[in-house]
Length: 137
Image (cartoon, rainbow, N blue to C red; front, side, top):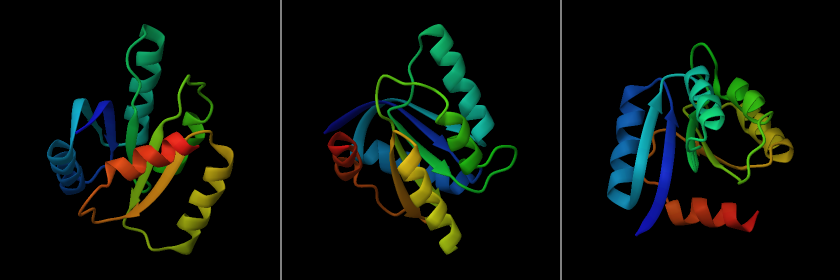
């Protein structure tokens, strides 16, 4: 079974968050799963943990459309932070707008982390594939 230390779920939809948590607990061992309703809350926690030597997430499930700080704004802030490791960021969205796919493609070129793109609803998560792709980059 796959072991992951810390996963962040950044999504304002409680049903999606619940479903992802069920898939996580069914598929892998994870020490900490944290939920945030917007990017600002998650960013605040990341910066706080960095300043205190706390854990940073190994994997982030990131919604695009959220109040306060959306997924794209989160990525803008996230790319300003220097990490010792690459983080897997799985963008999850209900959007079928080609502009969102194009934006994701542009972030893949400029952010030094592995970015995946998934359309909601999420029925399964291939953690081996997510993590293997990260190791290849």
